Amino acid sequence: MRTEQNRSPIDFNRQTSRSHGRSGRTFVASAKVTQQELRELERNARAEGKSLSEWSRETLLREARRGTGDAVFTELIATRMLLVNLLKPLALGEKVTSAWITEAMTMVRKEKHKAAQEVMQQYTQQTGKEASNGNTVG
Image 1 (spheres, rainbow, N blue to C red):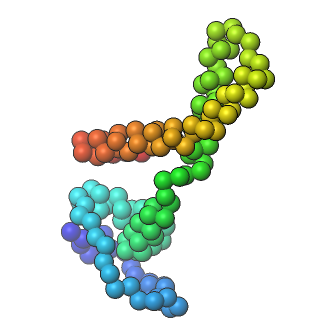
Image 2: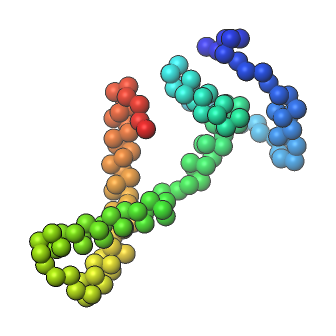
Image 3: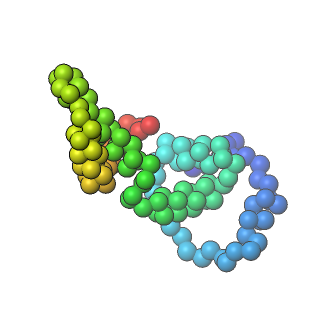
């Protein structure tokens, strides 16, 4: 529960100026959180100079709109795939030909999206386990 001691002063001009030029918000999306999670959320909102409500709305919408195909993450996984496939023959002392590199790149192009989804699933499952154990992720 919030107390007067941990509330920061409210800039009413800034708080009310956000509502100009947009349609009214009438629906609520809520989530139950622990006291520790609430403190973490408030700390993040305060760090960006936003109210918890404003920060939460922006964060929820950004995540909802992001989709599952994060291009940077997918390309990072593709680079990892290519590197791993290149290092193995080099470590074994085998010659890597241009044809082999072309073939490896073709395989990576075909498989990178699936591989990225699998890696993201592993992170999601790991995060869920850590959260249920009370550990923080980060």
